[in-house]
Image (cartoon, rainbow, N blue to C red; front, top):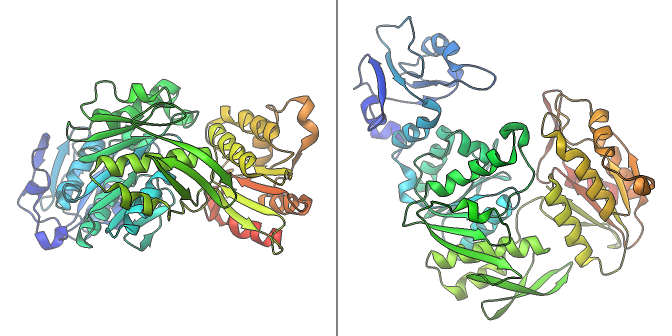
Length: 490
């Protein structure tokens, strides 16, 4: 049921929240909730929040001129209109999740909410969980970097974790469509900004933690502590599923009230598996006493699948049904996505690997399935206006694990692509310099790699995966690694 159909009032929307100041009618109906002054509806509410680049308080007048009759704010406005309700709320950014939850009828309370956090693997784990449950016949929602889904309907994702209003809107739609489950990626940014505040997660998965987002968090400890917030919020009725192979897992569950189980490849844990065989067609693993064929590739994907298995079993699903469903799971778009040339002699792989750890894992996975001993040609770049310290590491890993490396642009944003590439080059040892060439234009770089590839060779295009654009000078330009590589390999 939508908020409009419920005729929710300002008082109901702000129930149990600490209010500092109120002016105007609290029994007024709320017919919309928006963060954008341009997107308010008549008799709707506008949340004036302070952001990193703009302050919503500067747009209060514009919001009321566009029809807003409820203003939620942190700073009390000096000038107020008689026909508008003003409510001052301390730390509105964090409280907005609870406000949106109330507005949409607290939809998360009606779903089995599974959160996935970590540096790498979030999208794969969430997507695998969604796919497995769909194969088992459940109605399921998915909120991930690669896109949002309500059963089989797709929605474009603008952020890994949506803003609180969009998030609860989507959750409400899931409930209306009969969903029982929601698998959700939870980013460190979202946790830091309180976007998931008040959501009753039934389970939370920790995949791993490595070098990422230090441009935002400042240092690794701050980044790790943001991830930990997810597990701090869990109740004693929830379960935490922790990767035992990452030492940061023990930090995540310190002082957490959740029941904790561990999963691992290669060591004793509550849930473990052994990889028996690997090939381009997938892998055979031994799990819970049974052999299972997976369509997926790579040690890291075996770990991702194990996290899903542990979660579903802990949440009461049948072992036999889960194993059958996992054998059908294909994983997320742009994650180790295989593309063969017309004759089947050269293989292209597109992967979202955009951190040193992720790039090393995908190149290691390629080593495991490269049975023909072909050369590995890697196309890789680094994003602009983001953590610069990972640039040399990315280039170093690519050079160490590839036969040829083509350094190129990723999403340069407002930076000069050539300058980013030069910073990447500083990580390349002189003994490996002969392997590396620079081609600034990404399309041309992919074409160069494909033209260099011989029968049996593998071309890896890393960094963007599922993305269908490049960000250049604050503009999004249509660009799809998968389509460009397909054309180049013809």
